[in-house]
Length: 343
Image: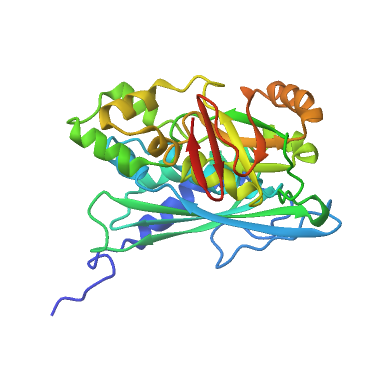
């Protein structure tokens, strides 16, 4: 009777060890002084940063969603790691927190070390951009669970913020200015709809695939210098403007967005026309070119704009806070916890 091995069942332990060896240099580049452990342990250990008086931990988790399907189908594995980091650290940033530690989970049916190395190098690059340490992760090889060549990703971020510096949105008031920061495309949201449109169109040219697979922008370094003046922060992620902006403020308020305040990237126009998608559906599915919003008092708007622009952001005023129940003017979206109105 033949003696079975784990490899016979589809799990290659040696391949996993080789992956750890290959990614070690990229992981080391993300190291922070608070880390007490090295890659390969059962768990990651870290002390809290010493520059905090009353630190509060801020935690976020996310994935890349079905953007992975597009990346896998087109052999574009190098940037989805940045997508994974960005979707987590941008959420943590909304609380005013410094991204501190990041963990990843990579699951596949059969480990392709070359592909996994490309993905995890992208994760490490994203951590460098965000200033957080890639403290550890898990590579799960699960034969029979995923089709050949497929993999999935999940990310977990721990941030730190001073208790008295948490950005809650409680200070937001009528007349406050909304400053929008450019996205790099759809980021990692709406790809089930995007893929449906592409399938209905019989596929996509390489240049369109390039635009759709642009990695999600990481806003940490540019937003950090304006955190003290921010009354509210919003990551325009799944749910677009309609579902995300109201998470920033109370029921008595609404955000009035001037939709002609920025040039919408043409990729969104292409998707809207090809899919016959109405405007409200676009606004609750995609970021439409604005990936992050900073809410500030009108008196601080000029200073914040200058600081953001000096950090390399294409920042602009895209609207103001109004009272809930306000009617939109032509070309304006008014969104509140009660819903959205389009002028």
